[in-house]
Image 1 (cartoon, one colour):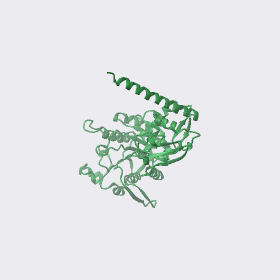
Image 2 (cartoon, one colour):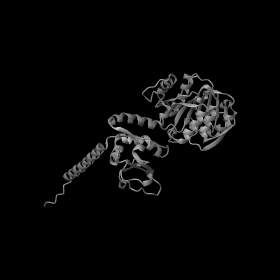
Image 3 (cartoon, rainbow, N blue to C red):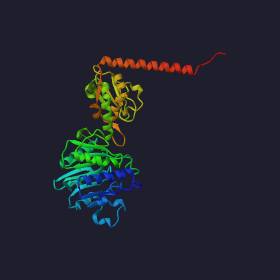
Image 4 (cartoon, rainbow, N blue to C red):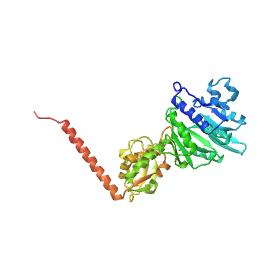
Length: 396
């Protein structure tokens, strides 16, 4: 059976997710399919009509008929999974996002696991996966987070590994949420490479899945790229990193330093506390789009929203670093550090590991002086032009 979707009535995001699941089924020749219809998003509803078994959350409320229930368990998938005795080639998991923590005791290994409830459902379902099978799941864009990394270690401990990550069209889950989720493909195959692809429409999906199957890497996210698993943070960061690589050629004559190696102190601002001004320091905003500053008097945010970096004066000039972070490359470097799906912010640990290009100290000071002179000339010209355009004519 080949899945057919009405392009007029079906939103593009839902067409994408159903088509992706069906392309994987066809190209990998899967037959025994388990569908977890656990959220209210319904992103796999059409595809799941082909399933051998569905687990339907009772909260879905009437999404499926009584006729469908012959091949379905109705109830909380966290509980209903314990009733399933079969194994499957392919699992499609339409899971809720951002559920609170729960605990699950794996009696077969006599250990207790604590994680988000939707992640535990993901893990429990994977235990029903056949050796060559795959699981496709809706998840939060949380690869940067410590909680996800801990859960991924648990997955790996059970012998499950993320093979691919797909970025679906924007507003896939609208109006339920504006969160941009990911779709992950999990297998029992351990690999150091991760396949990543961005899906804009259904036309590109067949090629992406074919490239995944044949392990072909391209230079185009719309066709799919293999990268080192450790290098993936999220799609936003990946695209910014590519832009950074292009701009680095402008700084190829400069030495690269890790920020932690050219600073003596890196301190987070604290609520209702003020920083003491330090010599040769910069102040990097943790949130928002405010500029990096070398002078506390120019602060546009409360001090609690800055990170104070006291620099080694024998290596780097704070006003040069202020200029660098106002450049196109510097702005992209900062953007690459932002994490958090609700309020993006910069973590101290990420900031300490960032690399910055530095010319010799004398050249840094020359750049700062030149910039200051240019700024002074610009202000003088602006003032002159303003005077010519708006002359004060006191003559009688």
